[in-house]
Every structure is written in C-alpha cells, then in structure tokens.
Amino acid sequence: MKVLGIETSCDETAAAVVADGVSILSNQIASQVEIHARYGGIVPEVASRQHILAIIPIVEQAMAEAKATWSDLDGIAVTIGPGLAGSLLVGANVAKAIALAHGLPITGVNHLEGHIYANWLIGRSPDFPVVCLIVSGGHSDLVLMRHHGDYVVLGRTRDDAAGEAFDKAARILGLGYPGGPAIERAARDGTACIQLPRAWLKGTSDFSFSGVKTALLRLVEGGKVSSKADAAASFQEAVIDVLVTKTVAVAKERRVRQILLAGGVAANELLRQRLVANSPIPVVVPEPVLCTDNAAMIAACGYFRFKAGRIDGLDLDVVPSLKMA
Ligand code: KG4
Ligand code: ZN
Image (cartoon, rainbow, N blue to C red; front, side, top):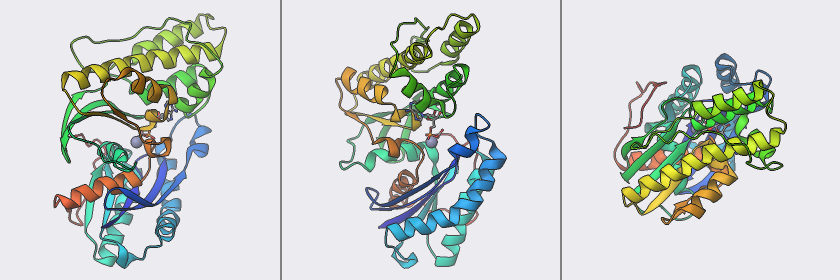
C-alpha cells in the first residue's frame, strides 16, 4: 500500500511516498530556513506564501522520485495540526484536491504522532509498549504508546519547549537561527563548565526550560560569558541532562520495551549519544533527516491510520492547536 504524505505545518514544505508504512520510496523537503533566518525566526505569513510556491513542485518531485503515478497510490496523508494555521491550510487543501481529483482516500495526521512514526522508517519496527520523547520547536512531550494510535501523554513542557529553548539560547548568544544546530555547532569548541540550573519538577514527568534560558540571559547581560562555545556547551548539557534523566526514569517506571526519540531536537548528536549511553532499555533513534520535519513520517503514520480504518472526509479541516490523544 503506497501513501503520499504531505507536511506543511511549519517552515518545511515536504512530500513523500512510503510503502506499507515502513519503506521510503521518496522523501522531498523544501526548507524555508534561509528566508526566515533573516528575521531570526519563522514569520507565519511568509511561511504560508512559500508553501504555496513550493507545494506543487515538491509533490511532483516526490511522485517522480518514487516513480509513482496517481493510480499507484492507495491514499493521501496530510498534517492537519498542530502548527501554523496558514501553513497547514496549504498542505490540507492540496491533499484534498488530489484526493478528490483521483478518487483517493485521505487521512488527517497529528504532526507529533507523525514524528513518532519516523521510528517505523528505519528498518525494524518498534516493539510495544514504548515511551517516546518528542522534542521539537513547540513540544517536549513524553508519550507512552501501547499500540498504534494508542497514546498516553505522561509529561509535557510547562513553558518553553526544548527546541524553543535552543532557539532562544542561540539568539541570546548571537549564534543565529535555527538555534538548535547553531548551539550544537558552537558547543563542539567548548566545554560544559558553566553551572546552569536544571528544573527537575520532581514527582512529575513534566519539563521546564524557561529557567535555564533566563539564567543564561542573566549571565550574558552581566558580562559573565567570556566564551560563547562554553556557554553553548553548558546550555546544551543542562537541557539534555534533564531530557535524558526524565525519559529513562519514566521508561523504567512504565517497564516499556523500547525508548523512541522523535522531533527536530532529536537530531542533536549529544542527546542521541547520551540517551543510548544512559538507558538500560533499548533506544531507537531515527537518522537526523527523519527527526526534523518531513513528510515520510506523515505517510508512515497515515498508513497505520488507514489500516485502522481512520479515513477522513473531504470536509477535513486543519486544527492549529491539535493535541495528542
Ligand atoms: O520537529 P521540528 O523540525 O519542527 C517542529 O515541529 O517544531 O523541530 C524544530 C526544532 C527547532 O527548535 C530547532 O532549533 C531544533 O528542532 N533542532 C535542534 C537541532 N536540529 C533542530 N535542536 C538541537 N540540536 C539540533 N541539532
Ligand atoms: Zn516537527
């Protein structure tokens, strides 16, 4: 079964064809990052206009790379939220138009659920139950997944998401946008020698990253940061320390068989290494290009939704504040 996935929730216009929810036949991504970098962050109006320009060519490229014709497809999966309303609408409307024109079934996918499904695209399918750490620009969620489509959110961020914290810290240090890769690059030349606070929020699986960001800001404003590399390394260490410790704790408590990593921050090499090194439970980590926004993960998730009979009508609409479960 071949599913065309479409993803336009934020600043990547992406389309992919995936077979049986596990084999990537194509994975095309048009990034707007250089356009938004000028403004130091995503400008929603600019993002939706770029999606309109990029979406048709990207879908055509995904179909060509997969050597697929419309009649080879069995369904369309599209991200309907969470994300920017104007951006989501572009993908949703293109998906509905293709579904209508070619008589294909359509299913609306939660972007965060999509991130989890990147873990089905790396050769071997995960063994349930799993705990998944989803760390993106807007979310830091710990989710227990017992079966396909069965999620329990065990913890979430109470303020800044992990990716948002990386982006803000990079801005504080003048390292540019997007902040995650910028902090990671800068940190390679430094050591984590600056003590920054960790919010453990004991007794919960929630996260909070606004404190560490503010502590960094105070140090910079007070002229106490002599090395940006050391500051970046210390910030990265503080955030990853909490993410890894809390994820391993909840995975042990829930006696899961695997830990899955997902979302843009999962592209971070130190986070990947640390989680693997500190977990007695096997850790699954998709390659970085499948951690950041892409449409293959949406197509994979869509396949399992179709299999469960979760087909939407052409009245499918976007839900910018869509929640997990
Ligand atoms: O999942 P994603 O691509 O988009 C959202 O759904 O938000 O995540 C984007 C976030 C950004 O905040 C970005 O700074 C962060 O992921 N990110 C990273 C790295 N690559 C991307 N954070 C830390 N280290 C990285 N290498
Ligand atoms: Zn994402």
